[in-house]
Length: 330
Ligand code: ADP
Image 1 (cartoon, rainbow, N blue to C red):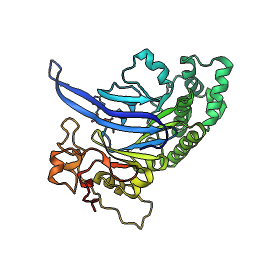
Image 2 (cartoon, rainbow, N blue to C red):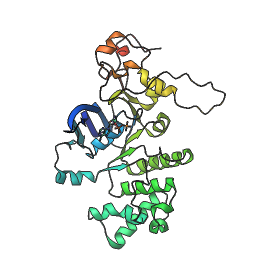
Image 3 (cartoon, rainbow, N blue to C red):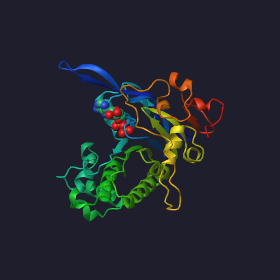
Image 4 (cartoon, protein in one colour):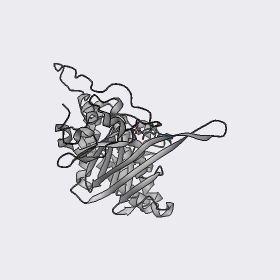
C-alpha cells in the first residue's frame, strides 16, 4: 500500500464489452477487459502497470479518466468518486487528470502549430488568452526542453521525441495532479526513451503530481515507478514496491515477465522463457486462476478457484495459491 496520502483510489473496477453478432446484432459474448481491479496511488507517486498486450492496461487508464465508462466499481480522486458524476460535474475534475498517449503523432492535430496545441487547454478552460497565454505556453515549452521559438512549428517539423514533449507540455498546461501515461515511450527509439522518461521524472520532482504509468516493458516501468502492479487477463496478479517486486517476485507470471527482460550482456546466456503460449481470450477467460493454462506450477486448486490478492510481505500482495504458506515457487 502507498504510504503517502492517496490521490487516486480504484476499487473493484470492471469494464466489460459486449460482443455482438448476427443480423440482429444480438450479444453473443462478453469481453472481460478489466475484471475487478483495485489499487491506490499516492500524491507524488508513480505506479507502473505492466502486462502483455490485451491484458486490460489501456482500459484501466481510460476508465480512470472516464474516457470509457466503467461497468462497475469506484474511482476516487481526492476522496470523490468520479464514476457517478455527470458530464458537467466531471468537467472541473478533468482539469486535474491528464493523459499522454503512446503515439504522439496521432494525438496532435497536424493543422495546428505546436504553440496552439499546448495553449488549447488554457483557452478551452478560459484560463488565459493573448500575451498571457503565449507567455505560459513559452514557459511550458521551456519546462519540457523545447525552445519557445519552436511554438510556431507544426507537428511534422518535430522528431518523435519532441512530439511526445509537446504532448507532455499540453498535459501540464492545466496543472494536473494526476497524469496517466499510456505506453508513452513505446513508439520512440530506445535512445530517446530514456530522455523522455528522465523528463517525466524531473517534472514530477518539480510539480509533485502522480503518474499512473502503463507499459508492456518491465525495464521501462522499473526506471520510473515507485510501485509496480502486474496485470494478467483483466486482473492485478501482483503489486509491490518496485525494489521488492524485482528482488522477490512471487507470482509465476511476474517471474516470467522478469525472466524475459533483456540483459545488456552478450556473455550472458539467454534465459529460458518460463511461460509458453498466448494470453487466453478475455471472452472466455479460464476458470480459477486465469494464468493456470500457462503456469508451470499449476495445482488442481488453480483450475477451480480464483485466488484473491493477499499479503505476501511488506508492501507486497500476490494472487496465487502458492502464496498460502507453502512458500514461493522455485
Ligand atoms: P492492453 O492495453 O493491455 O493492450 P486493452 O485495455 O487495450 O489491453 O484491451 C483489453 C481487452 O479488451 C482486449 O482483449 C481488447 O481487445 C478488448 N477491448 C478493448 N477495447 C474494446 C472495445 N472498445 N470493444 C471491445 N473490446 C475491446
